Length: 167
Ligand SMILES: Cc1cc2nc3c(=O)[nH]c(=O)nc-3n(C[C@H](O)[C@H](O)[C@H](O)COP(=O)(O)O)c2cc1C
Image (cartoon, rainbow, N blue to C red; front, side, top):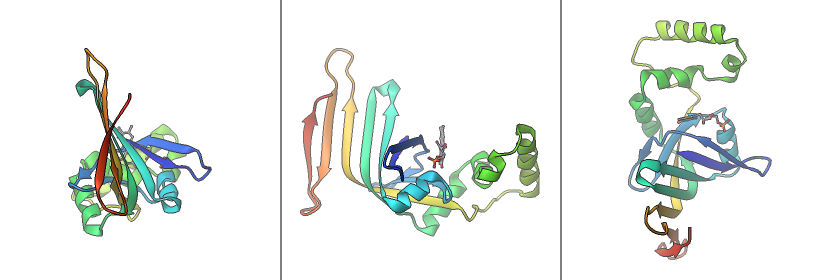
């Protein structure tokens, strides 16, 4: 999914992240505490995620308030990731990014060999969950206009309302 935050310079910032989990109420994603997005969320803990299902002609856009997940939730998400992604969480740092491709691969191979499974998450592993305040569903139609329905949370009453949007 595309995760959009507000950059510290005020411009929108967007990148792809894995949708780790939808727990029925919140959308979870995971990243590194030193990343730009983590810094941005520290300043402004609000975000939008866009999930595109091109083959189904569907788009879901969720906007909401972001909070860290519990330590247990973050650990469970790390354990559920592939060995490759677990290693990536350890080795995708600024120092490694500056190395030559050969040195990067050598560092990866050495770390992999020295750390048999199960691997614990690095101290920089962070999980966040978005509690929605707005959900917009888009459905394409081969033979007619697309359909868009926006659900909005009224923070005072706690009630959700919906309306059809064009587009
Ligand atoms: C398919 C795909 C999945 C990705 N999943 C994640 C992820 O789950 N977490 C993450 O931190 N970065 C993920 N990335 C890398 C991010 O897009 C991004 O480059 C990185 O997190 C740094 O972003 P930032 O500098 O805006 O913080 C993924 C990239 C791609 C293309």
